[in-house]
Amino acid sequence: MNSLSAAEDFFEALDVPFDPQVVRVNRLHILKRFSDYLKRTDMGGLDDDALRALYREKLAIAHADFVQSDAVTEKVFKVFKDAHGKAFVGLEEIEVLSVRS
Image 1: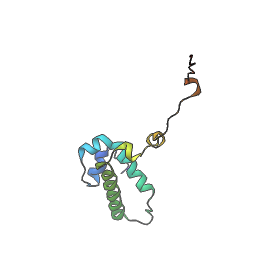
Image 2: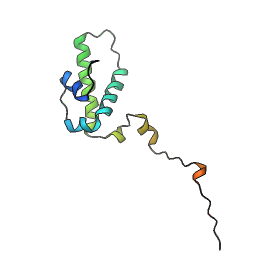
Image 3: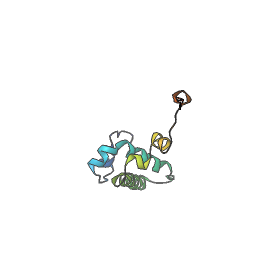
Image 4: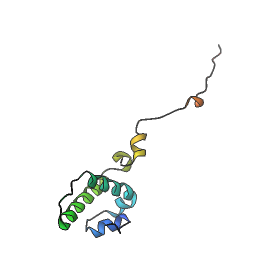
């Protein structure tokens, strides 16, 4: 697994079917989600076959997350989590207008 780099390499090595268009648009998001799923999973004591099955399952789920959704909705990366519903305007950007009658 350490020698794999492109998202498609992971799908091919693990023999997980994928939609090339979904991967092309969301490759980094899918790999990050895959990594997040693995980090939250106890893999202690699993043999190679069980690990491969677990990796296949988590990669398929990560891919499925983006088949019907998108990167902004899924908020995999911090930039999307922080940006949702927040805006900042510094005081130096506020201009006071006087109203004359």
